[in-house]
Length: 166
Image (tube, rainbow, N blue to C red; front, side):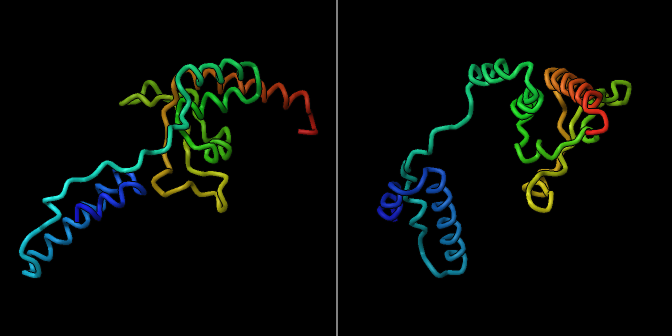
């Protein structure tokens, strides 16, 4: 048993090996309850250290700040601020329209309702989010609110400039 897990350690991650050991342990415990085996040898084995995971692709704080600084004044700034500060998926953010965004909230409500964005759709086929539980309403930090207000003002200017072509 221990040798079997050790052989898999070159291919599987440590977390996967823990899961495999857990599944085997549970199966043998059930077999013991049914008097099919006398002893649970899985409990005698330790979980070996598996293959290392892939390096993180997440931005560091300095990299995220550099992206936001470089995007300031561009039409992508609101999108980038929203994606970096809320953690919403890109396909969810691309499906947002202004009726999904509340930049005021309701501070007089009990409890107060902060500014928010309703993530209920995505640009995936069928318009659904990745999972049913992915449908959510996210509170917006002030930096997002400021960036989205600037973007909304820019869109209003663009709409007036375009006139009937809008």
